[in-house]
Amino acid sequence: MAMIEEKKVLKSQHNIIMENRRNLTISGVMDIDSFDEQTVILFTDQGELTIKGINLHINKIDVDSGDLSMEGEVDSLSYSDNQPQKGGLLSRLFR
Image: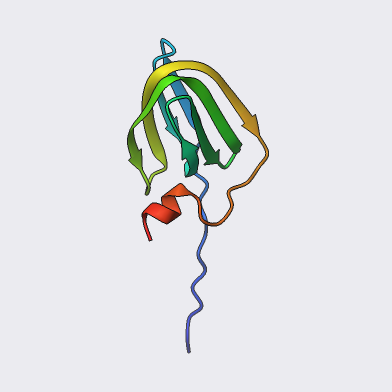
């Protein structure tokens, strides 16, 4: 008898920790759509997160855990309900 294995997709918790509008630590990141020094667009299980600011830099991304750390002068964080499309930045980088 063959056993059918079911894969369960575990949603990670989505948290944002911002320190003095300069350092961000974000968990629950599923993909990165785009980034430059003024805008970073991330996909989370809570929707698309757009971060705007000045001199934004991604310091670290852990693809397995969905943790991201970045720094720069943060002006705004906003969510929309857009979901990631196939072929986001992380999937292109890690083919």
